[in-house]
Amino acid sequence: MTGTSTTSRERLLSAVIEYVADHGVADLSLRRLAAAIGTSHRMLIYHFGSKDELLIEVIRAVEDQQRQTLAEFDLDPSLAPDEVTRRMWHHLSDPALWPNERLFFEVYGQALQARPHTANFLDDIVESWLAPATAMRLEQGVPPDLAPAQARLDLAMTRGLLLDLLATGDRAGVDDAVDRFIALFEAWRAVEENGRARAVRTVTQLIESDTDPDAVFALIADPRLIPTWAPRLGSTVTGDLESGWRITKHGEDFPLRVVATRDARTADYVREITPGRDECAYLRALPRPDGGSIITMVLTLGSDDDPTVVATSLHEQLTALATLAEEH
Image 1 (cartoon, rainbow, N blue to C red):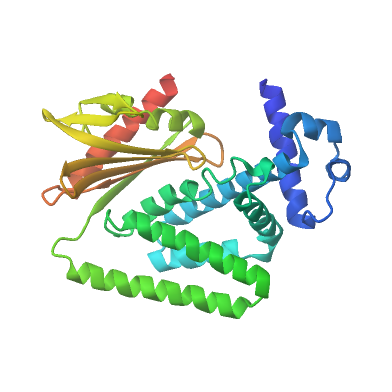
Image 2 (image 1 turned 45 degrees about the vertical axis):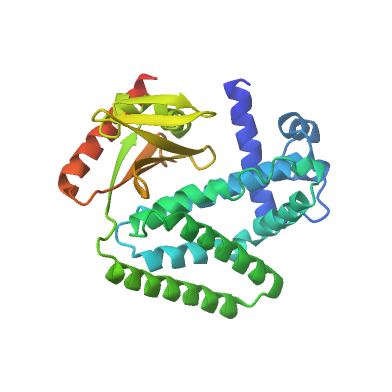
């Protein structure tokens, strides 16, 4: 597809998203939609195939926007963990998003019934959120072995209470439930931190790049490139998706688990140091408002690691990654 048609497609999709937000999709036809946004139904069919396929594209685009919003809250150092959760909830529960959220749950239900047009809808409807949510919880101090489950719980809580809000309109009730969830998490976190002999520590660094975030994602999703820009993680990487990856560091060979999520532009690297103990690196490529990318990396620390030294090394690695992205 040419650059011009891609731009046209993106412009049409943006217009459809705005229309759905303002009017919903009840009794919506492609002809009426086309007339409302100043195009023809033939152009909508050319770019999106059908009304059902178009609506799924709308859902995916809106979901991506919400993940970017979560990332922006998460990157604000002035916000405590409870405030990040509360602000994200207030954003998602804004009535302006209700038409899109009603569409989401409608298509979700159709996908669970295996309607043909939703064949691929469930593929990443959960996974695309787990990577960024897990990275956020790790940054907040949740242990690596618990962060994925906490991220799944966060997602289930949010979607469940959004469905409750859309069904009942009980704003006070769902807001109280969110506050209760936050209070339980903070109480658990305090007990967990006090009860652990060794707190799990992380270091986070970010860097800006003029490279498109999709191009950056293509690099971080390929573990074979790790030694090129992140030699601290390992000197060589062997294997493949089918047989599994292995990474060598200081002459020792370790299993490497890689989870890459295209929609969220995240790549998680988990290197098993000893049975039951992992070293984790979590990367994400966020769109920069004025073009280009914001690349972030969260790294778990060992008991003997100096955070200042690791932060310096991390920044060097991100600089090398940005350079590699610009060269590609």
